[in-house]
Image 1: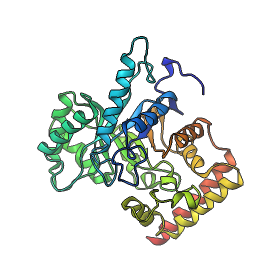
Image 2: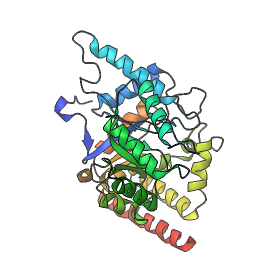
Image 3: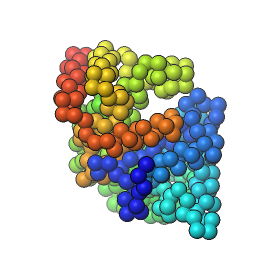
Length: 352
C-alpha cells in the first residue's frame, strides 16, 4: 500500500469526498452490526485512515434498529486513537490529521425536531463522540410534526454557538428543501442548508430525474450520495441474502431493501443484466457500481460532492477503495450500463 504524504490527506477521488458510513458500528445484538467493540471499530477506522481518508458519516439513529449505540463506540475509538497520538514521538494512524465527522440529529417523531429535542440530540452527540463540534449536522429525515421555522432557528443558534460548520438535510423532497431554505432566508438566519444526503447509484437515479439534484445545485449545496452501490445489489445472490445482510428479510432493513428493489420487475431485470455485464467483463459487480458513481455520475468535485461508503469488513473496505481508485470504467461498459438503465427508465414510465 502506498504511503500518503500529509499534503495528500484527506484524499479525494475524482474530486469527490469519500466518507465512511458508521451504520454498522454499535449494539452487538444487532445483526447489521459488524464492529461492536471499540477495538474492532478502531481497526475499521484505522484501515480507512491508513488509505488517506478522514471523513466519517455518523448519526444518532445508528445503527438502524439500535439507535444511539454507534456514537458511544466511535467516541471510545477516538479516545484510543488520541491516546496513541499523545505517546511521545508518535502521530499514530492519523499522522496528526484528525477525522472530520458529520452527524445527524435523532429522528423519532413526533416533535423530534423541536428546539429542546435538537439541543438534547446535539449534546448527546458531543458527549458520546467526545468532541465539541462536528462538520455537518443533518436532519436525518424531515419531521412534519415539528415546526420548520422553529427547527431552523434552533439549528441557527447551534451554528452560531459553533456546534457545527454546515447545516444539512437528508431524504428531503423538493418542496421540503424549498421550505427549509426559505424558512432560513425569511427569518434572516445566518445559516442555510448547504449539504444534502440522498440515495444515488447506478440503478437508483431519482435525484437526477425528479429535480432534486438540480434544486440542490440551484441552492449551491453539496450532494452526498448514500447507497452508492445500491446496498450491494450487484453482489452475488448468496452474498446479498446472507444472514444479517442488507437483503436479509428477517431484518427491518432487509425488508425495506426487498420492498424497494424487488417489487419492480424492471429493476430486478436491470440488476441481473448488470451482474451479467460485470461477469462478461470480469469486473466485480459491486465494484462496477462504485466506479460508476465516482467516475461517471453527475456528482462533481466542483460542488464538493461525495459518496458515503460502507463495508462489512476491513478486507471489503480496502477492496472498495481499490475499486474507486482504479479509475473510470471502460467506455463500452459505461455505454452498456446506460442501455440497461434506459430500460429501467422506460419501465418506470410504463408503471406510472
